[in-house]
Length: 336
Image (cartoon, rainbow, N blue to C red):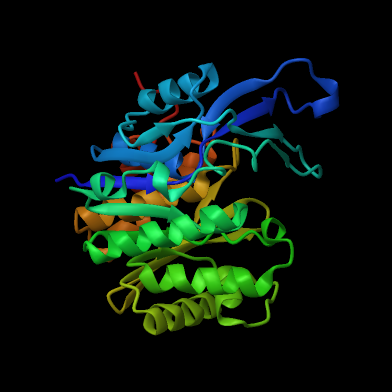
């Protein structure tokens, strides 16, 4: 069984400083292309689903390079429009031990995507024969124009009976303290969502509750997400819960059709943190399409997130077989 899944969102060029150096120490940068939509669709393509990205890229060699990379991930580029001059960039400096990883953005507001308009996209044609469409909360934050486009495309998709997937990804720094605008935008998208990925912090922000520092408080996570699901009539809502002890520990939580389930704890070390949440989201989407039992769905998606932590780059690339191997704890050091 497969489904036609699309995503609306930005493609960015990732410029990574190698070997844990700081930006001022290097003369070389590793180039790749990513974005929440790219990451989720890449994983779903690996799982055997038809995927297509809705975005705008410049009509130059940089845009050509991005499209070549997207195609190599098994994602259709039929819904990508061309125009404008720039692609958004971010510089990644990987942290080590007590030194945090650092991301610096450039050219984002001037990018082809961020300066696009609704008229650039033939929405009626794009949404035809689409089963699911994915949106990211970061699209609500990067500009007023993209925020309005995101909500309008979601509305049109909802009217056509397409399943709406929304990953909150609330980033306070991107909103420049525009709390009320942010909250109103999130409320509009969550009302449209059938499947929602939301952390405890996202839920507290959406409900106007004060945050606390106990991210691993399972009872609080369950309470908040059930409130959001009931209030906004969301079929499926899920998140990961991280704990830091001697090792990094992660668990997945899901609320689906009135039932809740928590995965087992996975202990792991991080090679590349960015994109791990997208690995989790892709696992939930895959499980819903294939009607996995809720306990299998949350184990599969959490294991997908763990493996995304252990692979290089933003984009999840592990197969379903590799993920099930981790779920069943039958991974080996060397496959021969």
